[in-house]
Length: 307
Ligand code: 13P
Ligand code: SF4
Image (cartoon, rainbow, N blue to C red; front, side, top):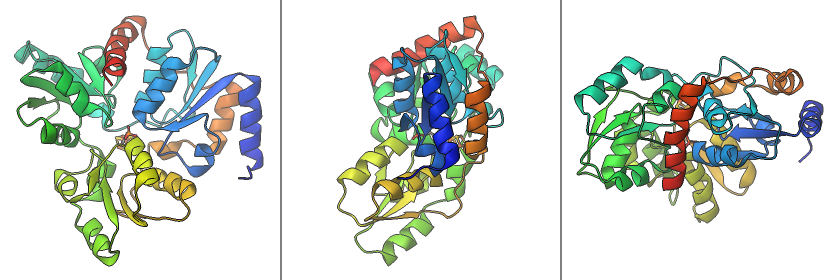
């Protein structure tokens, strides 16, 4: 793979500054190509937790991901290349809603998707990602669980744990990108055109699509499934950045979007240009107040221990 000038300059500065470049699967291909670690939310949390010998973490992802890296590394500089890389789902859970639910169900543990802001994580029993939500909820052994903000991820959890009552905060939290992918009818029409193909849905997809899909997987799960499957055509129900990765890693296979133009605008706020500036100027630095960070770290580390 030949790198362009800007990619090479970013790599040089990264080396000079002993920085770690963490990149989510939804980033543009040019950024994916120069990542130290390219992965899903859980994989990137783990890498952030292990980041002992680096002087700076540069996070190409959205706000809550960079915040999580900061919470796990309070003494390190954590930088995100754009302040506009803000996940709308993470902002759907207000502290008022969360505290109201906690007051109403004082005995119920609180499981929050990592797609939340640090102040919400500070009030959670444990966090989860799309790769471990069912595992985390199972280990709590509770009958009632306060769960948020993604209702579709809750649906996925209830598929394997039907006896657990999930109390949703907010009532209809969702990801716009995965909601846009729809009920899976288009994916099934594509499957009919390609006999032997597989259909994958992310747990943030609508329940109707989850029901129709052959596999419901986190983006990391999709990367692993691509290594295992004999299917030559795969219909992928998630953001397009992941499809860019799959095409690069498996040029012999055909990956088709379950819905065209499934693009996360927040993820795409990060460009090679603003990543270069972030490396040079060490901006924009992520800050989390100590009292929030200390409490949020407990719920994130609990998740990492449970998964
Ligand atoms: P993954 O953890 O599966 O990569 O998902 C993160 C995310 O934000 C999906 O929208
Ligand atoms: Fe947030 Fe959805 Fe974008 Fe993921 S894909 S970062 S949940 S808006």
